[in-house]
Length: 576
Image (tube, rainbow, N blue to C red; front, side, top):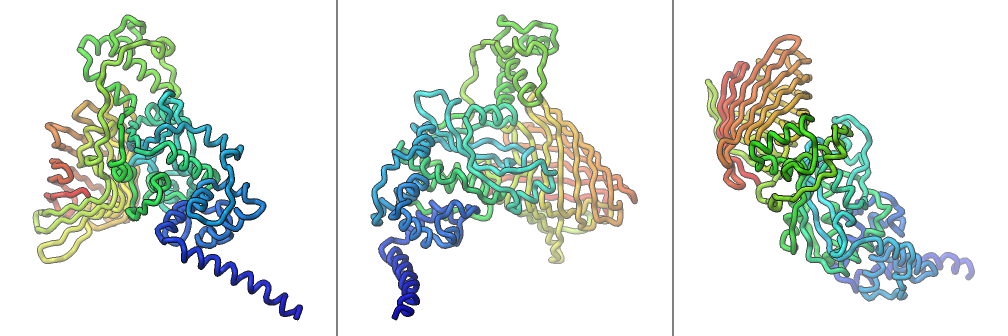
């Protein structure tokens, strides 16, 4: 009898637990489980949070019902108040759903209260930071949340952003780790004055604010959830589970009970901002300091420009009787050189103490329709001296040098998996080019300061004398020079390729010229030579691109030193 009792007791317990979970399924609609899974940061069948310390059940990262059951069980135990204090958003959701759990006063939880009271809560803005081409993780922009009180300066606001914790790896390892989820990712809380200094001055990225229609109560509940995430760790993927993806998931907590399955293979910051566009109640912009300086510089008279030049050269003292435009540009220039390069220019103290009246209108707002870096399809014709064919191009993510970038501070090129095919007149399909990753900083458009140009490319191309499709890896560094509507870049590069004609190792000097003659029209000229250990190859490209919102027409003529000779590509390209 006693033996049977010992055997049956565990069995009864297991059955009881199973029935309790079945009861949860029976009484709770599936859409409410969707929100519970959001609180656990599920993506499909498991959570994106990697440490088990985030979960109360040992299999909570793959079994959300078990996690719910364990949470309810612990809330009903002597640890109930501790669990409610450490998981306030989960506790409030469970209590609101009518589950049988005690009532706890989470307002009295000391650590939680200190955390929540430390946030500003009158408004919450979704902020888009423009791209930073020198950092692959931010090459298509970055988004963050700004918590702000109406009666306090914006510089004192709180920010939450999601980022990878990286090491000082080389570019290839950095890209590989970021694409494969090799870096851990976290939600970081940073004072806004630090964000503004780093983004607007050091990295020269504009910040576009979109205040959301969230109540103070919704914002507070989101902060409760952030408290639960303070030790959560994720795998960071540059392309999908990145800053945009995780911030979007966080906002789904604030907009409770909204089920969202829009996320695809690639997630970009701009599309997340676009998704929440109908919830925006106010907008404003803090533009990159050099962009502002350039706008002021463009409005200077010739005398004011001469005064600015004399002050920079040190032949004219920096003092308060200078024109306002000159004083503001000097202040920006001196601050930028110090914060970006740790270089203290002569008369630094005098420059940063200058007082001036702002004369510029508000900076432009971010136009999402003209900043789509996702999915480009091109279709057109290919012609060379011996054949005709159809040109097909598809790129899932990126922007190339042919696109209009006149509104940007930095002219650049960045593509992933850019595939170009030729279907010849005898119906043969030929790989014209495949760029696994291709990035290039052409020049900085500011007249106030310029930065180095650089390039990196890994892919398959036919840039060799035999016109063979070969694997090619190259790097280049140099300098860019620009005016408002034109720019030129000079690079010296080297690379490795699997080529019989030029050899494996080569040097590659190049020049690239960009010009905007009229609105929405871009023309360019590029030339390079490959000097290999077996031979030499040269190529010259002339192009013209005309934009029509999400459509563009590209004409590209290439003078090639290969056996195929010169060729022409005409293509209609669609961005979507």
